[in-house]
Image (tube, rainbow, N blue to C red):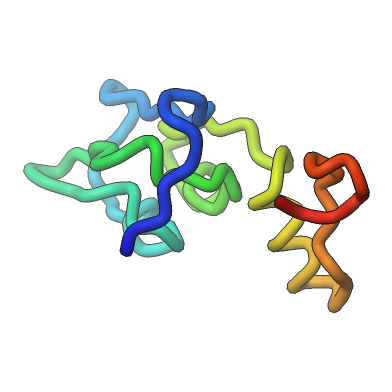
Length: 97
């Protein structure tokens, strides 16, 4: 099953003008949001984006923008990195959704 988040709320965007199709975004995206055809990346399903920011940080053309560091995806990633429990506080009690 593919992970889906809230429909039409992801901040992910891709500039066709800047993209030269290196494929880094497709390599680093944990949910395989990107695909590359004819030397251009494209977003297959924006609603699968967890806004982790890996694509934007690894894009040499600066063709991708995403407001990373928000919501539960960020909380889960920071929990993995720090060895702590995720806390995005969106459930009201300091726990992750």
